Length: 258
Length: 202
Image (cartoon, rainbow over all chains, first blue to last red; front, side, top):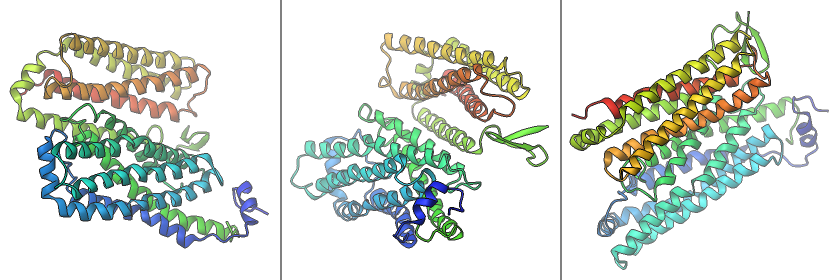
């Protein structure tokens, strides 16, 4: 008999023959901050992308940039390509917490997991494109280097709506959390909406090479990226705590196989 | 006297001393939006320092009369929406829709005014790529215009719902959230107008 406030879920969960692996769940939740750390340090600092090399740079300047920083680019980008997968594993952990709000197999939980997973694809491909540019800098013409640099940014930025859908799904579900103390507090949920809104500005990057909307500009880079960079650890903190809270809820309700 | 903390939840005013209008979370979004605009205003001023002559010459091409009218329109709009919330608080449910409609119509007026202004600029051959000033002018006013479009859509939703008597003194969280956002939109314009149209670059 269900004794928790989620009767439909509890009934199904209580008969589950599978054990809930809270430890793995928590480890996956930690991979979000690890992803962010890798992106921030490797892609941002070591690979000299904070701030990005200007979009107004000439092909010769782009080639010189990749030539000058070839070794740090090779090291940072090659590790970062691998570590981008942590965004996917983090998204799985988030989706599982979301399921405890909207029910097992909920549409928005699935959308979140798909959004988080597909976010990895353009990021990984972009990093691989820039890695190729750094690796082949001595064999490629300035025109090709310029094309690879721009191609990376267009892919990296303009695939934003996949991540937007992930963020929207998370925000909607946690807004619907009816617990007296929500698993994810309102400020973090609303910060998600701020991040969602800030992403739209990057749609302008194909059309400008200077100013606030250029891919190195105050809006398209500093605001759009840093709202996301702040959202990931904020949400991760409460997702990690949510795993413990859900475990306690399950134990209190006698749902060892939840 | 009773007050509302969450939709459908009535608590006594003794238990809940004071609360922010709407939900707490919307203030995070409003605060973040204000900070983002503050960063943009700072960046604009920094860009202006690098090229004061171009910014000053370009500023004179803006239609400050139209900018002034826009300011009056948005102040009136905020006032109208504030009256709508007051009406809800006093359970004057029949009055709220007309005030909210006032907010919608003034929002639409702002959009028309901004369209005229942009049309003028484009017919003069002025575009965002013309120089740094116009890049900032179109970016700041364009992002603000998107806020107006979004806010007017939300006010239209409130107007429709309020005509069906969906809101009252005990059910006003959503109108308060939208009104708080709308006041921010007004406040942002009150800064944008002097910054772009009136303030000398050098």
